[in-house]
Image 1 (tube, rainbow, N blue to C red):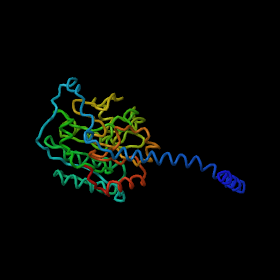
Image 2 (tube, rainbow, N blue to C red; image 1 turned 60 degrees about the horizontal axis):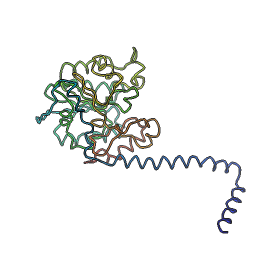
Image 3 (cartoon, rainbow, N blue to C red; image 1 turned 30 degrees about the vertical axis):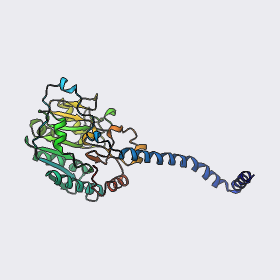
Length: 322
């Protein structure tokens, strides 16, 4: 009886509402359902990212059959190489880049690395090329140079660059970089993290990127996001022209005479705030997404709100995640 009376009261209230109010309430129901769905999925996504299996810190080592397909000698050296990290911040108002640099400073302090950091008012194109100019000036056959985008946070400083190089490079390797999250959809590599060792190939590669700049014309002008990105398409094209990259790629790992491509989370884990995974980045594979214990978080492809939220998540630029 009480339930029936409650229902009748609710029905009477509904009848007394204006038509516009009724319509508004009816239209809000799907919105509430969708919002609730996304909210709980965001929470699930966050919980997934924060679960850490230590064995996944450097996932998917070079497959064992690679040694049989290639005659290279794989590095297993305990002799540390000097490391120089190059990064450029073109806009001082980019809070997330400032925070990311703080984490980089701490990381360099832990391992005794040198940082070449340029923070100058600049156009997008010139700032992107500036990091290659700085890297070219530091290349040496007896050291490693790491080119980093400024929107990167070191999240596990216990992993040295040397460990990654020894694990994935062979004796002839001069360039080591990772797949892009959309490597199965026409974007084979990501330029956010590139590790180099000085040699003729790596010097020519950087020189050609600087000289040729953006991919504006030719057969590749409509590929590799050349219409929106600056250095990544050019890097991709130069690797293809030198026969050091396959297009389309066939696996997460790729090994050539001078270039090794690794699975993304080895050196270039993407972190996008959860809402992004239900918009333009829902195609990102799990193998690209930052997990607790990964070397770094690359907070790419988000609006200002998302990047600021990500910067705050990582403790204003430094939170030890080991």
